[in-house]
Each structure stands twice: as structure tokens, then as C-alpha cells.
Length: 358
Image 1 (cartoon, rainbow, N blue to C red):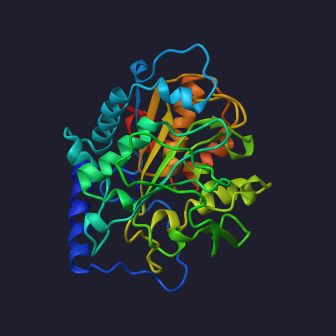
Image 2 (image 1 turned 120 degrees about the vertical axis):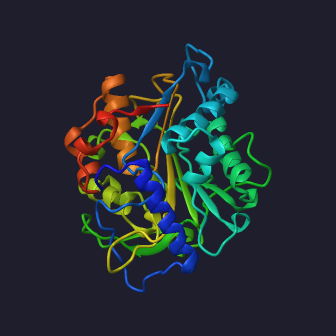
Image 3 (image 1 turned 45 degrees about the vertical axis):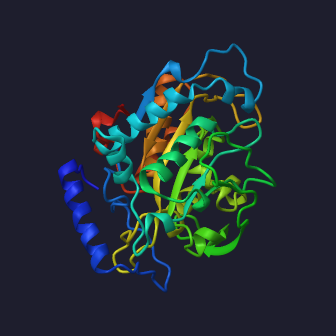
């Protein structure tokens, strides 16, 4: 995807909307389709645009935080909500949060917003958890600005039995799922991974989820996966994670993030996305870590980032936030593949390759 102006994106969005109105049924190919690298995934937002915000007011200072529950108590929810709205506006290059959320989220064909089903992949593992205020703000934006029913929102992470911890402040009726659909449905996976088949959450395989939102944390991980875990690896709680920890784990990570289960239905002839499924990716780095999930976070960083294309979000946050700002090690040979295997180069990134500050 070459650099695209907002005007070009909005023109494309109008054309896309007209096409959906004329042909309201999403064509789901009978044979397995592969996404063509560089083709647009989200039609309304520059796929290479990643925005971030740093604000020490988002959490109260603390010398030592011993639990995810205590970290939630230190979050200033009102400031977090304001900043997430700012991120949405910066991402869509708009001034009005309502317009921003309606630009980010695309209604599925032949459905009303009240019938739309949303899945939110959270990251709840060991001593780490998506912060309440971040999750609540996204859920309230989806219900309040779009009209999605709270009962149609499913918050999940199938990393283990009863793995999703409770969230405060959600719209009444939101479903915090445990072992939701399990990782039990077999599905094919294309190259670069050579394994051929894996298992996935059944609701994504059968297409019952209309919109997928990815809210990840920012911790250290195996160097063969770049040295960090964020939005791409967050889906090791959507797909069978075992393959990702093998020698060819990076190939597996890239391959599952190119599947229609995440990207959306793909045209078998062109490899283009017919309707985007994963429409928003967020990195919750109010706390971030130079250690893994078994240890407490190392730093109270007060940082949030947002984009629409997962590998670009991870590349930008890994290189500009983790490596440049925090000085944490990032395996660049591995991390660079998060761009190149999706068909992009760093020189194409907007804002001189820097995260765009909201």
C-alpha cells in the first residue's frame, strides 16, 4: 500500500459503502483464500498510521505495584477515557470522537448495529491484565456511539481455564467469557508457516463474529518472536499457541495474522478483504515490562497506542516505544518481518516513521 491521503481514503470508503449497499451479502468463498500483501485491510483509515499518547496523569504514582488489582486502583479512568478519544480522533484525522469511532468501526453488511456481534481479545495472563478503564472505554464507545447491544460484546482470552479476570465499569450485559468457544476448531493456515493446519476459536472460524477488537499489553518475550508480546501474539489466545513456541514460531505468528479469521473474508480471485473483521488494535502500556508474564511489570509508562493493522502497530510500538524510548532489546531482524511479510517497508510509514502523537 502506497502512502494514501485522507481524501483518497474517504473516497475509497464511499465507494466501499456503495458497493456494500448494492451487494449486501458478504461473499464467503468456498475455497480457502490467501490475503494479498499490501492490499488495504481497513478501508477508512490509513493502514500504516499508528498513533500514541503519553500522559503521566493516567495513573497515580506508585513505588511498587504487587497485583493487577492494585494497578487498576491507581488508574485515573477519566483521563484514560479522554486520551482514548484523542487517539481515535488522531487515528482518523477528525476532531469529533463520535465521528472518529464511526470511522473506525464498520457495520457488517445486512445487519443493524444492534445486531452486530463484537469480540474483544483481551490479554489476561498470570500477573498481567488489560486495565479496567481501557476495556470499559472501548466497550462504552461501541455501545454508546454505535448502538451495539452490550450482550453482543464478548470479551475473551482462551490462554487457559478461567483465564479472563473481571472488569469493572463495563456496560451492563457485556459478556466476560471463560474458555469461550475454546480453541477447538480445525482450520487451514497458509504460508509462511508450513504446518498446514491449526486450531482456532470456533466463533471466528464460523463467521459469527462481525467485529474483532484487539487490546494487548506490552511485555518482553522470546527473541525469536521479536523480543516482545503485543497485538500479533495476543492471538495465541485465539489460535493454538503451541506452534508459536516452536523453532518456526515466527512463521506461525505471521501466518495466523494473515488469516480471514482475523482479517475478514477474502476474495479468492484478488486476495482482497471483502469486509474487515479486526478493525482496531490497541496497546495498553499504562504499565509495560522488560520482563515476561511471570514477573511484575517493570515500568509505569503511562502510554497508549492505537492502529488498525496489527503488524504495523507492533512494529511501531516495538521500535519507537520499547527500543527507542525505553531502551529495551528488540530483535530487529525478526521485528522487520512484521512489515516486510505484510508487504511494507519502513520508508512507507507516515510521519517520518515515528508514532503520531495524539
